[in-house]
Length: 144
Image 1 (cartoon, rainbow, N blue to C red):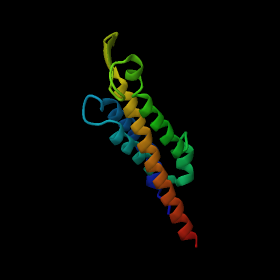
Image 2 (cartoon, one colour; image 1 turned 90 degrees about the vertical axis):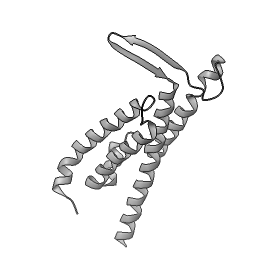
Image 3 (cartoon, helix red, strand yellow; image 1 turned 180 degrees about the vertical axis):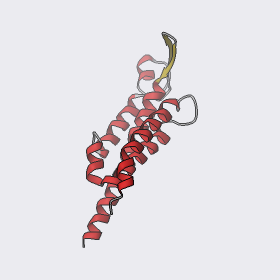
Image 4 (cartoon, rainbow, N blue to C red; image 1 turned 45 degrees about the horizontal axis):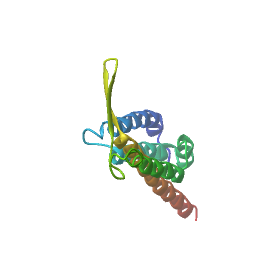
């Protein structure tokens, strides 16, 4: 059954939850948050779209297939551990930091951000794979 109210608000909820998930992701290497919690928040945003419009629409809103998203995330996580090996700064996954300033904005970037982005993608892809499969299974059982 379609809900007019949910359909009207789903887009707003999606945008708000997606922005909040990015905020959680980007603050995670200095404060509580990070890739896992941000990924769960992003997957929740897609869950709202799935509840409002169905699996097909949610898949269209997702740029990559969830399994491909998990692969990209795993690649990012592994990639974040390689710079210390190349520069002989430490072992695998020893994180490096760069601090700088652009105008009035102070930046503190490191390989932990790349690792968190990888975790983010893996969590979003994994949760959405499970969610989409559950909805497809439910639709198949309801049709029989």
